Image (cartoon, rainbow, N blue to C red; front, side, top):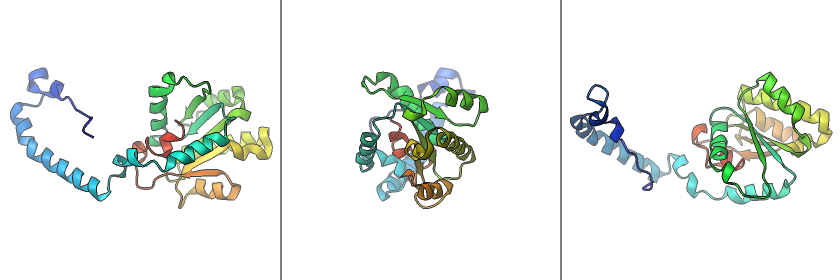
Length: 213
């Protein structure tokens, strides 16, 4: 946390004028509120609340991810089916580190956060499904857009690959409830547990972001 610094100079009245900018007096008057808020955050963090702040120190999931990768060396195309926070983290990591990846095992990354028929039709027409893995991500396991994308992908996988379709699906969802959990159990599809106490937009350093990474 001490490595993060916020430069607010461009928000001050000296930079943009008193109409829109914060004046020195206003800034000074807000300091007690800011200090109190900081203490509240510190207390909650030390109690174990705000789990997303603890994610950088939670390494237990990493061996599971590495093992999953070792078992699926055939994957050349990795597709995230998710919306909002279930997709944004993976997209951010791909944009940040994708071009820096010098590995000889480069994997193509795709993400669909809607069910646009033309986009999906074009994708399924041109992709090699035999080397494609779909990561279906939903914290609740009930997200309609994600469920629709999954149902379409499963239908096409079944048509082209038969019973092997299960190997081309992996779920990241609640381990206690939801449609996706029920499907995973019924069809023996690999599933990783989405942390229930971390909101979608804060999950980039959980299994949600790390598995695609």
